[in-house]
Image (cartoon, rainbow, N blue to C red; front, side, top):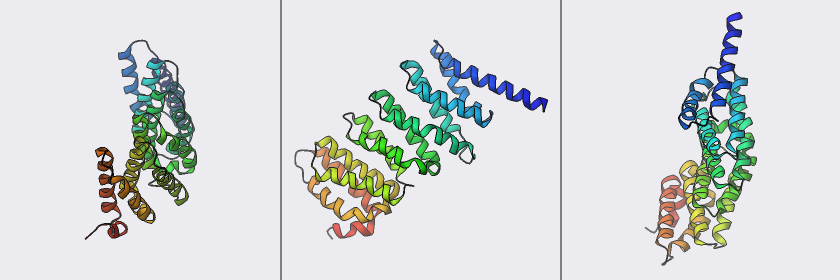
Length: 259
């Protein structure tokens, strides 16, 4: 018992020291502190891991750019090191982090958005099953970012959405697909159109069979956009999307391919 208490005290001290060093003025010290986070989350008790994650989430939206950047790296490190089979630790961390990441994605600061989108994609990729209860919250944050004026934000949103739609229910899945189809029907600016087409292709690659009920409508729209004579990039995206549909939904897309 005495040994256990001593071990707990030591790990608690280490946790506090490492988190404090993330805000050190020396960049090298910060980098070394981040490297310690990986081994540390596998040694400390669950409440301490939750403290680490919570602190990193708070720091990630700090006005201190250096602290914000290093904390984002730290959060990615923790997510990559967190055991996927650890219950209840992994679900608890997912519950703790999802709301904060969703709020960060909705912020106007593009650098915060980009980091939060990256981390959300990592979280969905590694712990997708634990995030199912929070899909509505995540989608509320992600879908508006498809209309961002920043291409990098749109691209990272596509990655996160593609991971989420693997496990989401049919209502959520269809909500996203219909949003993309409606965007294509409205014939918005070329940047938005490219984003919607790329998103459909990416979703199809991840969860292709679920797109089958929408293929007829999507192919009709792609045929129209593929005939654009003044936008080679748009035509290329249409071809890439068709390739994904043929590979993942061959039966549904078959009638649209001339023999």
